[in-house]
Image: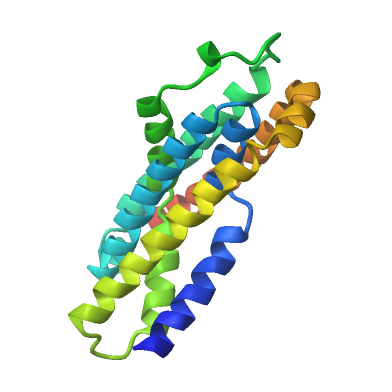
Length: 211
């Protein structure tokens, strides 16, 4: 059991530290002097990780295989959301002051984090893949629960850590001096992710219609 959990832990950590939409959202909120909002966004991302890892344990990959259009629809929703986020970042203006009024509400930040993770079915495919590779043929209920709990713990620790690291004074000052440029860079990254997901979804939809 320990060997299996160690393998899942290593693979999940490698995935977490790879820059993606979740990292982008939390770090951008924190660096723009919204630490409180970034922490709640991290909570939202964590709930998304709990949802997808649980779904993977329950066999969501089988559902995706049986109903590929459902997965494609989720991918399209994720692509549209990322493109929307990219547009917001690109068009945002650098504020004159960084006061509390610019903070995103806790509920909105949590929702942003949850949507960013929940609209990406690739998370379910990732968890399904590593669980399938690491689990024995007949995993115990304890092993399944432990794997999900570990994934949730990893996601929570990593994204909350990001929120605090990017909220440090030096980072905030550097971000504030070049906020418009950095927002546009973040928007470009989000847009690239969204566009890539959109292209993949369209290709898969065409392939599905052709069969």
